[in-house]
Image (cartoon, rainbow, N blue to C red; front, side, top):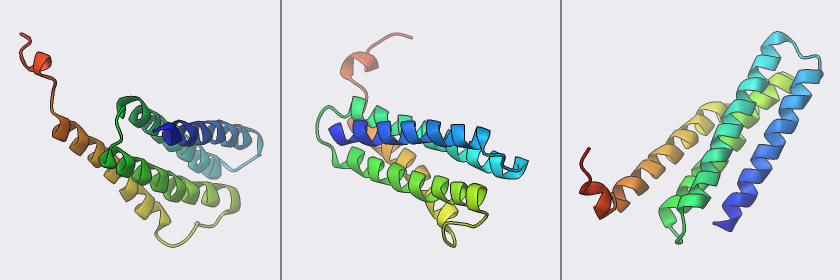
Length: 128
């Protein structure tokens, strides 16, 4: 899970840098909106990868798969928005929908991990 800290740090730092570029690059309103949206998605999903590092004390194939989905999703979805915002062309056909699907699969994979692990016994016995 150490790799997740590295990936999360890279995505976080690059999102902040790209947000700064967007603020000062003189982009059209539409292009700036695209880049700003990509920055937000990248930051949120970078934090999701960080959360996987924090909850994944033991090696888990499910959490590793979630990391792969989030990483691919950021690269494809955000990459497509960055490409369109900065250069006016898409990364490649369907890169944004493919990336968005990967992001959704990352969250579903986290859900599966949570359902598979279940609640600790003391959580089940608490009175609400």
